Length: 196
Ligand code: SAH
Image (cartoon, rainbow, N blue to C red):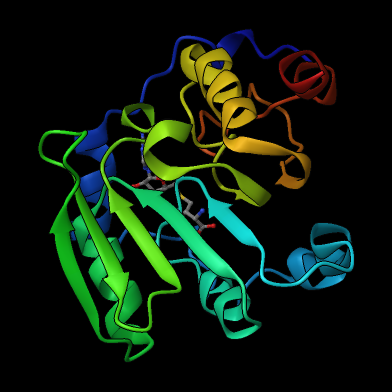
């Protein structure tokens, strides 16, 4: 499995914003992801009232699922359109505020307070801004990160999780010479070297 063909590929933030504008969002799953249902027990591990992080969240409906179960959800997404569509498609009232630590960033929070979506690049955040998490749902996130940024992404994610956290990661397997990505092919050996 030669991943060399994808190593240099870069998708800019502008291109992601364009995908949202054009409705070019084939990655979005209206019905949510069956693997979250399947491995929910692993994520929760018998715990309630968790803080769960959704990196590169888009308008993932799983954020609503987990909030409805009583957890507190934090997401980050560069597209403000995606964030607003999330709240409007679930008929959730929200308020909007600036993030003092990050110039230009905004935080959109459900009025009930249990869903907070940061609109900025994930690389602008750190645990001093958003705290640490008990659980992570990483679907369309590590595989959407540019290959050259994977190490930085993984280090940040490690910084964002608490000691006893659970991290669910969804990757895709295919011949990287046949598709340019995203989603990028991240072999299991690389997942191991990134996260230990
Ligand atoms: N996890 C979501 C979306 C996957 S697509 C889902 O499962 O449906 C990847 C998303 O990451 C896109 O919505 C894109 O706009 C966003 N994105 C890309 N680069 C980003 C970055 N550096 N910081 C935050 N969001 C980013």
